[in-house]
Length: 338
Ligand code: NAD
Ligand code: TYD
Image 1 (cartoon, helix red, strand yellow):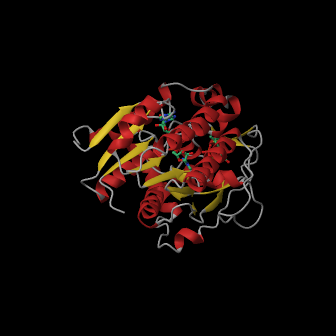
Image 2: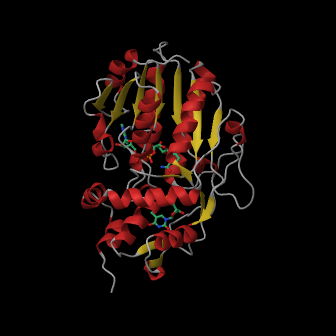
Image 3: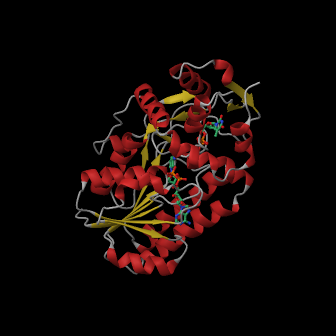
């Protein structure tokens, strides 16, 4: 697919900013439009190095605002849609914004797309969380969807809306369903960055329940590689799981973090479990493997590099921690060890 210009939604977030930097390396002449509302989760410092890039254009705006889309759509050949509310704990406390952004936002992007035949691809970023929890085995793409948090339920709505616009209106939709990403520039509200930065400051690491929950950890750059491959070789109308087969219990990751930082395990504090906490996510990613992708980063190396990044970018995350927080989070940041 010959793409000269692209619209990225949510490009100042964690994966979006890594993807923009990755695209710039792979496609130096690509014109990149980044449409981002700049919610609490965005960080304009994530793309500080793009300030003088003439082929990078930031537009502050909401994906629910059709008038902005009408200005941007004629200019681009493809869209990669990351913008979302993404923190499960926030979705439990205040689900409204998740439903508006994920469902109505994705609807607005798709509805506007009907008019613009110049756009050859709409790559929708979904998540493995839409399948729900699985005790044994792994979900292939055609599994029933069984989301259990307001976040994953609204992401499921978005995923199926994207599919319906392919099926009903023949729009050029591809759906990516990555597993839990980790790496540089991830917001400190999320598990791995929260535990690294709290440990660096000798603050407690709030582990939910018994810490037995498992996620399949995917290094963000491996995810970026997979997304680019889908842009090049993915089949319109199809969904693709992107996993890493790095399934680890939260407790084991917490122990790795304290050990790599040469801290004491007593920093790990078992706290009340998340409501409706999914025990295990696991996806079968044979389909994208058959397209020619597999993750390169070994988890231990990826975690060590991520720890190193947070160590050397203290200013970045301290600013984020000084910003807006929900109460459950503030509690653990502020508290000092007795
Ligand atoms: P993030 O929370 O770090 O960033 C989200 C970005 O979207 C922010 O820059 C925010 O300002 C922007 N945004 C939010 N609402 C918007 C709106 N209405 N209009 C325009 N911009 C808006 O998210 P992330 O972790 O980078 O995740 C990106 C995408 O990948 C999401 O769709 C998420 O569901 C999906 N995903 C994430 C993971 C993960 O582990 N982080 C795993 C699988 C899928
Ligand atoms: P998170 O990073 O929020 O991602 P998700 O819930 O979307 O998978 O959490 C990853 C895992 O870590 C999840 O099982 C919940 C757990 N967790 C904690 O134990 N303590 C925390 O403070 C956070 C934020 C998460």
